[in-house]
Image (tube, rainbow, N blue to C red; front, top):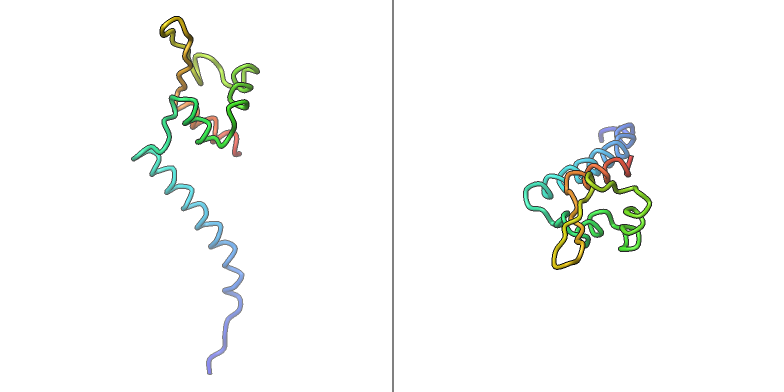
Length: 98
């Protein structure tokens, strides 16, 4: 019988971490190729950031989301409609998770 080298078991946590990083990268690449969320709309931003409608409203009112950078307003039929900037929302999520 051959001896078992248990030192390789120490590599398992590192391999798990690498696999989790790869999974995140694959998810991001899928989002670029075929977006799951419409990040120009509130519902898409809520799903992408995994936050509630109230949180989005708070981000806007408190200035966490900056008008002209994270979003802009369009007047449509005497109503103001918020259009989000997808690149800025993605950047916000990256910064938030650091």
